Length: 110
Image 1 (tube, rainbow, N blue to C red):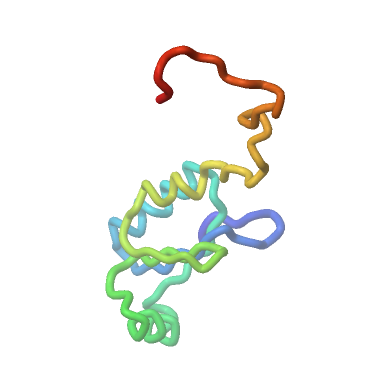
Image 2: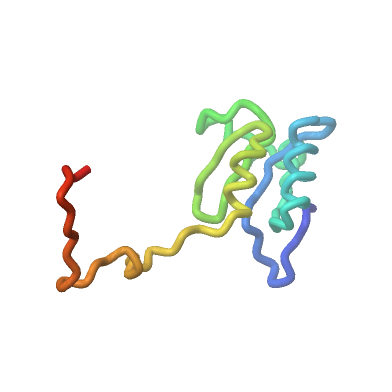
């Protein structure tokens, strides 16, 4: 098993195989960013292996996020994206302008 979260929930599932350099690098990077994950050995679960092959996945590791996003291979960029905070969808009030504020300029507008 991989790095487990205290509540028993993992942010990602990593489907691996033994002696896989990219699998090891993926797990090491997930641990570096303290992203909880569950590891499933594809050689120990043929049903999962068959399901992933049928879906077109042919290279380990296969990483699946909690929201269903998937990729294969060692992708440190995608792991960093998981670790970085997501921007909020709060309206940008600081960018809004008061209706009484007017821009006065004698030059051309850009």
